[in-house]
Image (tube, one colour):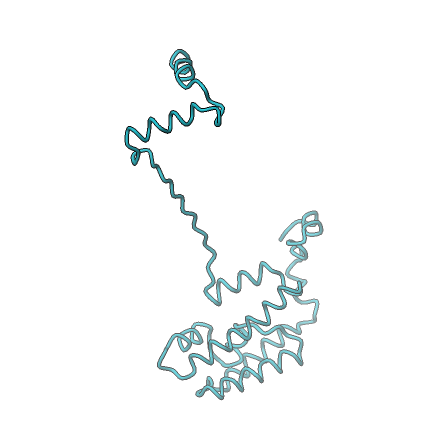
Length: 187
């Protein structure tokens, strides 16, 4: 929980000062929805064909729309009587004809959540967290520094030429020897 002072001043912490009791201000509606999803899923086998899987997703979306419940991957898994781990196992099995369709189902759910995060109806932090946990998104950034040191590539003549260039008026350095003598005396 975030203190009231921060929860009302920082947009990212809006409503984070809410206690657990807040979850039941809907008189247990969300809990009843999950109870229904669990009992429905327990009585049905997971869709056996790609077409059954698409029909299941359509029915799930219809249910969510009618009951104003945000579709999530977890709820879709419960709707179908399995765990998210089971869904991921099927999705990763290239020999299972439902694999590609299951990936599309997951993306459809993520698409809804993404649109909701973009219009502000879903907390962006929750969206990012769900992407990491349920969809395997990773945040990483690498920085590569490359330093080219061409001093070793210069011949003695090229080195002398560069020193002479620095001594020219174009670079406003006219007496390199006096500068180097000042540095030596300073040490």
